[in-house]
Image (cartoon, rainbow, N blue to C red; front, side):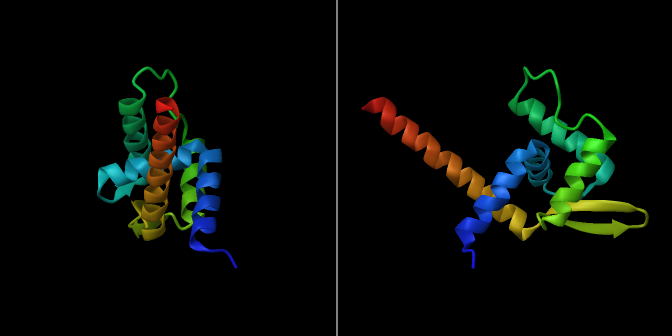
Length: 120
């Protein structure tokens, strides 16, 4: 049986392979409200542009990429989806929140290891 660490590591690996997924999760987290699928592209690309202002290409460039990443997030239970009328509204699920925190913690550990190495 997999433990918590192994599950989060596997999920993080999968989301990193399709970078759009992690950017969509981050965009939803920053929006801090339910986001309609059509707005999800703007939310994702906006946060990406804030972090990478020099980037020429945005992560969600087409409806196909939006649909693909949204379906993968939904299938992995990283987002909660509410269907209102004919639209879907996305929020980060509890598991998605935990994955984002795990990614943050991993990056902090990598950063601190890098600082230890540079001071030696």
